[in-house]
Image (cartoon, rainbow, N blue to C red; front, top):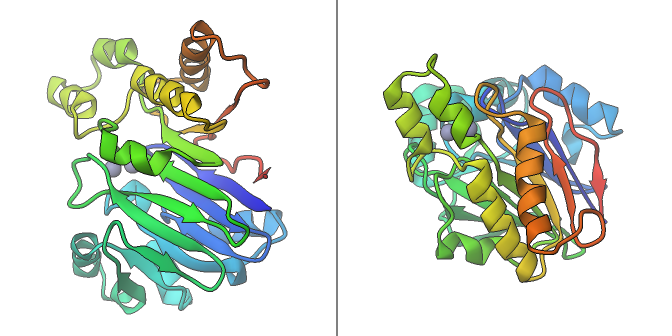
Length: 264
Ligand SMILES: [Zn+2]
Ligand SMILES: [Zn+2]
């Protein structure tokens, strides 16, 4: 059985455990080392269960706890070459744990396999992650992407669980005068973040090809609410004739706290 939970999700920090009861990977380390340790313990797990940390890109909300993790453990950290370069420039301590991996190549750890794939974001080389657990459960995490193209969709389909970005509500973003115009344009661009409605369209396409389980992730604190993100997606699926909890499962990853563990 796969075990998946997010430890935090959004612009203030991102970290997710994807694996099974024996071991798995952490995708991103955007939460303090201590809090990650505590969260794992709350689920009767420990850092011993973490085979590797995979870093999707170098933005601070994805690497906040990484330096301390590398200082205190030998857990391997995987990133693409360009991201690894950025990370080693930031810290020699991180460099010690770094392993470079090419996107589109599958990496087999002892228990878990994963493949990185490129997404569209304004970091040096942002990736999403497709994970296959020991008993062949497929989990795909794709956040920090301005849009989902056909190439990305290939990695998203046939998943037992999709953790997908639902960053902002377009109206809230456009009306948010506390955000400078250029920042709003950056977020809404093809290389920024995915809106609730674009997320809903992608989830609908994924449902049509057989995906059933979805977690909405990386919600903006200023330009979204869990209720709006959830309802935007649910309504879009409802209009297409799909019924919540019958045809699909949908939840929202909490921003600051750990989510419930999903076991499937
Ligand atoms: Zn980012
Ligand atoms: Zn981010």
